[in-house]
Length: 133
Image (cartoon, rainbow, N blue to C red; front, side, top):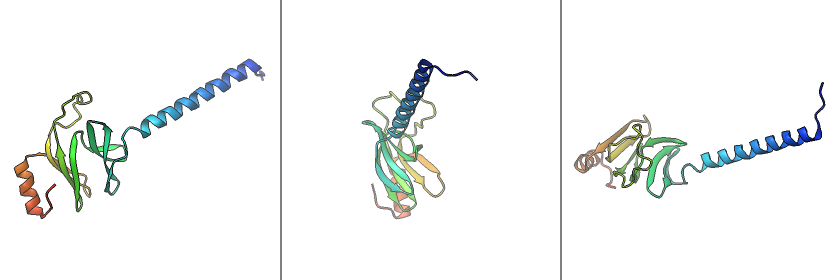
């Protein structure tokens, strides 16, 4: 068995120390992905990623895409409105919904209806007996 020299021990300890710092930096980046937001119950949050992008998230999973400008809880539902963004910096992905307007998210089933017009939304809240936004 080969013995390790002092310089090899020093290099090895520096590698482990660097790896530990990188791990801490990665944890910090992941944990800061969304700012703390408004609790919407059942683990759902209205969260901001930056000054112009707000989402509805559960943990680190986005359930209502970017540009949520208002959201409220109505029983088992999260209702709100998304606007078309003024800036498209993070909006180039095909995975991001472009159905702007009003939305209804069912927390119990995970289903989302989005892209409702104001008239459709008003009709829905009257039918359900919900308070307006």
